[in-house]
Length: 98
Image 1 (cartoon, rainbow, N blue to C red):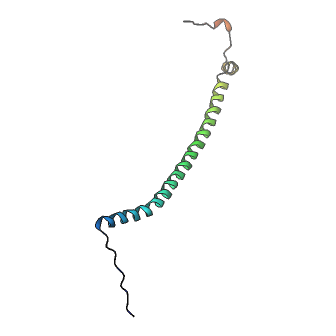
Image 2 (cartoon, one colour; image 1 turned 180 degrees about the vertical axis):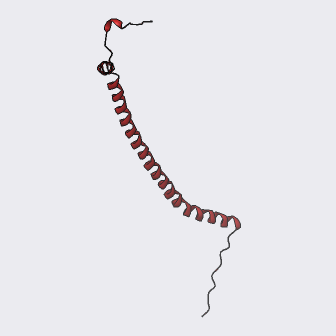
Image 3 (cartoon, helix red, strand yellow; image 1 turned 120 degrees about the vertical axis):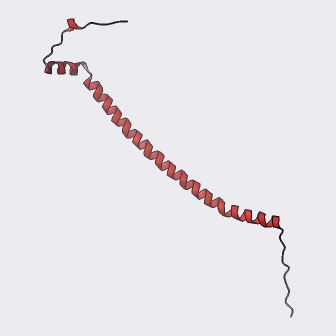
């Protein structure tokens, strides 16, 4: 019995580079995909947190605007004037027009 020697395939330099690049691409593609999906997920979480802060601040702003309107009402002005010892006299009010 004789051992059969297999032929060794010779690769050229260009072929080695192409195979190497293909292997790197084959490994890198799923890694890049996972990385970008993780970054997108993190960005979405941050976006939701910012939206929640905006909604909270909008509620606070609305509440403060209601308080401003309440304090600026004619009834409140008359109440404060009365507390300060002032009286409301419609004849003393002058209307200025352009």
